[in-house]
Length: 76
Image 1 (tube, rainbow, N blue to C red):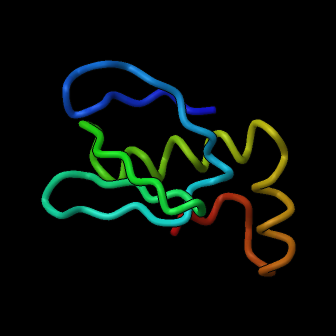
Image 2: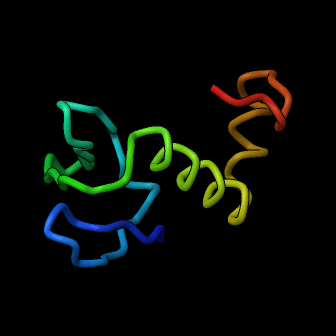
């Protein structure tokens, strides 16, 4: 789970492994695989960083990097 802030200012947690899309419209909108959308105060680049840190913490980043043949230090 990653900590984010709703556009209203209320903090909440989201399951980072369920995030399908992060876009700026100009607000940052997170779309889950279920289709549910969340508008957050954080910029898309910050959400991306938080997700990458979460993946690394639970060991998914290394798996993804190995599958794609890239260095774990590589950032997209």
